[in-house]
Image 1 (cartoon, rainbow over the protein chains, first blue to last red):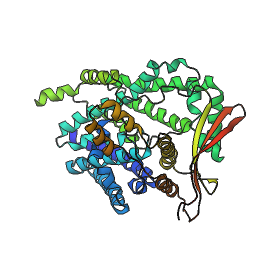
Image 2 (cartoon, rainbow over the protein chains, first blue to last red; image 1 turned 45 degrees about the horizontal axis):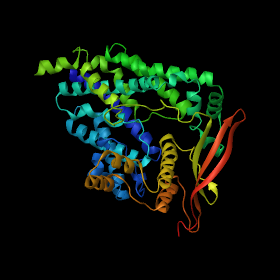
Image 3 (cartoon, rainbow over the protein chains, first blue to last red; image 1 turned 120 degrees about the horizontal axis):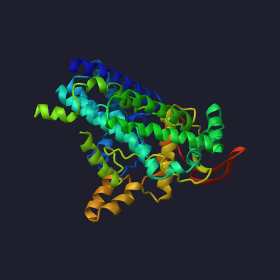
Image 4 (spheres, helix red, strand yellow; image 1 turned 30 degrees about the horizontal axis):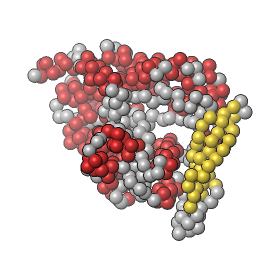
Length: 278
Length: 161
């Protein structure tokens, strides 16, 4: 029963991840597009340093054929995981390759985007036993909750919720290239309206904090997980329209909340798993 | 599990650890601007801006953000964030040198990066083409987007030869 539920849930999640990966590739971004780009920058995160200490990104971007091979191989792995998410070997390979894909891409992007869910969502597939998979699933669920909850919390701690001009000021840089190119339309009109009507943008900003803080409810009960997922998707949709920040790469990760109740219903906490299997 | 998670991440949170596996997510929590002005970067080929906003999201984002990163690299005399962080975080000169060698790009030829960028944006470079990187400053007021200044960050006439 647990196997069947997990298979069903991860088949859907892998389907979403596969579509996201295709969107990234079809936009013209993948390792094949980064060959010849010598400039990279890493954050203060030793986890992201590991592949570079082993010189792996340099090898992946050594030549165009190798980079294309990587992009296509990762696509095939994701297809294999969509067909059968319970197989361990594709799970391990997929998780490692997705991690390398994300780290290599972001190093050349020079800004570390938030879409790390593209490899974290694969973490439960690394394990063989279904109990271990579920344990890992619960761990990444907490990671997800904290990821968004902390975003809301930091907006409170920084005092930005007291600044009625906050979102108006943040918005100024978001659509600069559109205006510069004269590529204007309804989104730039909305943007201009929000820049010049700080009261409305302040209301939206407070709404985004509420949506993010709602994730903390998940620490106490799984009952509202689907609603947390919907609130986070709503947050990202608004983020996309208003701030021009799309969530592709993160959606499968968020959608795991739609399945957490059914997958974890046999245990009240992950600690119960550990005790029963000790 | 939840209690353990909260304790570990509360420590990470307290230490302001902005790590890949420590999801301290401070995005857009600080207003660095304090006004309605901003800056935007563009690459010009033969005096014409290479358009990026018509591309699909990831490519458009990549073209916009990596260009900003390149300008910061050039203006910081060929250094990236880790060049500063490693010197601040590690005191052993041997470790410093090892990490700088492995984790930073060193000195790269700007021509090489701009050539990659132009091709990545879908343009072909012919011999004799001029390429420039420009920073535009702008302001939003009731009348909309107003350009107030522009600065040439980098220029090369010989690219593609």
